[in-house]
Length: 182
Image 1 (cartoon, helix red, strand yellow):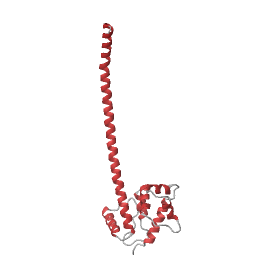
Image 2 (image 1 turned 90 degrees about the vertical axis):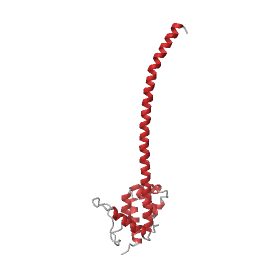
Image 3 (image 1 turned 30 degrees about the vertical axis):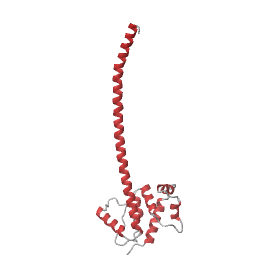
Image 4 (image 1 turned 90 degrees about the horizontal axis):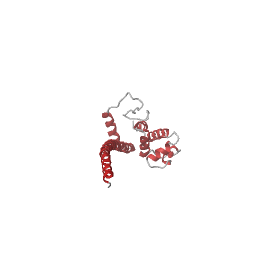
């Protein structure tokens, strides 16, 4: 039994609408992907526009990858040889090999899902690369702060030492000046 694309798209649309229910979320989702809020409100219309990659990307950025998996989950009555992935069963772990196999099947298909999955993979990969860069920069910044603090402490100690040597010298010279009258 093949996947009914119309049913699946409607299923995804309903799940995205469910995520948009809290007040203000629709605008935040639109802002995340640089779209107008109408790009999301159009999903609620009688004749809705189709779900697009940016809808999925916005949900993923705002709610996290678990929400994307929930949205992309096939409805129970609408799958062929692959059963729906249940995201709410944390005790069930899907093996990486099985995920790679499923991903390969979707990417190799001639459906719109291949494009959506490819865009999602690219978006998540870019997010990980960006997060790694941010982590590295935060680590470097932390090291720089430590170095600056150490240099400032050293500079203060050197200043204190200089002060201890300069004050007696100033007193000695001023004493000489008083005695010699110069």
